[in-house]
Structure formats: structure tokens, C-alpha cells
Length: 128
Image 1 (cartoon, rainbow, N blue to C red):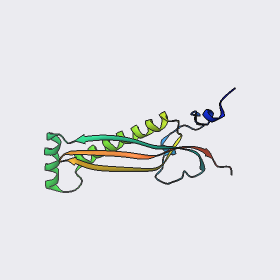
Image 2: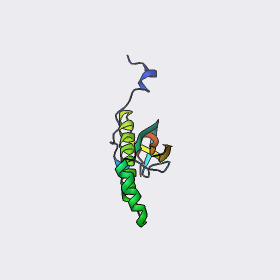
Image 3: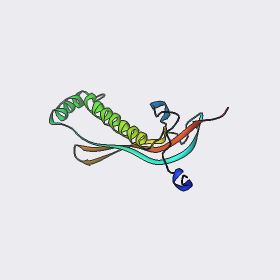
Image 4: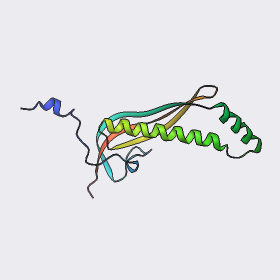
């Protein structure tokens, strides 16, 4: 005989897999209803600029416009934290993430923390 109290906490495999299309900054996922709220998931990285990167970035600032070396560094950090957040949600059995946000904090000169976080949920398609 199974314990009815413990069965509600056992992770159930979601019928939908967690993919980029199942991640949103909105509080809900269009076309789906949230059937279980798993909780906060996050990815975090701390990045520093190299001496070469600072030198090249400094040269680019002389000419104005997009500082591509810093843009690439920021994009790499965001991609890394996003991937870590997805992995965290998958480990918890989620098939979607809602209310996704990014945050960045300069810890000290040249050292930046990038955080990506959201709420892991299990969703099912809405009945039409």
C-alpha cells in the first residue's frame, strides 16, 4: 500500500520537456496552465575581464560605438547562466520556467556577477 502523503511529493516526469520555447519572462506561459509550482531556479556566474580584453576594449572606446569585446563577454555570461538555470529546473522535474529575469552586480572593479533566475513549474496544455 502506498502512502498518500508521500506520493504527492514524489517528482512526476513532465509530459512536456523543458526547451527554450517553454521559458518566458511573463508570469504565465501562453496556451498552458500551471499545474505545479516547483520554486525558484537560478544560474550564476562571476566573470572578470582579462588584461588583453581591457586593452582592446579601451582601444574600441576611442572610436565610440559598440564595444564588441565587452558585448561578447556579457552575452557569454548570460548564455552560461541561462543554461545553468535550465539544468537546475530539469533536475527538479520542471517542464517550464516563468518570470525569468537577469541581474548583474559589479563585485569589484572588473569582476561582475551575472544571475539568471525564474520560477520552475510544471505545465499542461490548456483545453481549447
